[in-house]
Image (tube, rainbow, N blue to C red; front, side):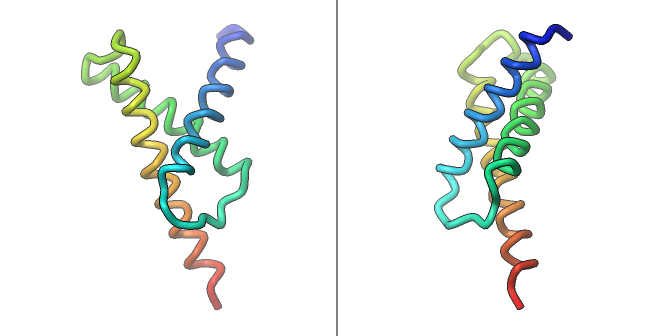
Length: 87
């Protein structure tokens, strides 16, 4: 993999993670680094799933799927952090 591909993947993960964090309506006890990590995981997961579904060449469907997966992951991680931080 080329360095430009890694850099673009990281930037896409940051954007997708931030969008996903904005879409979850509650306050999340999730830090910025975890948000970026969730965005990267959501981006790669959405890309893989869109290729399996045959949507790999349709940018907007792939992007929406990436954001949906990242939003679900942000909600799950926020719920886990909330439960672990309560006494």
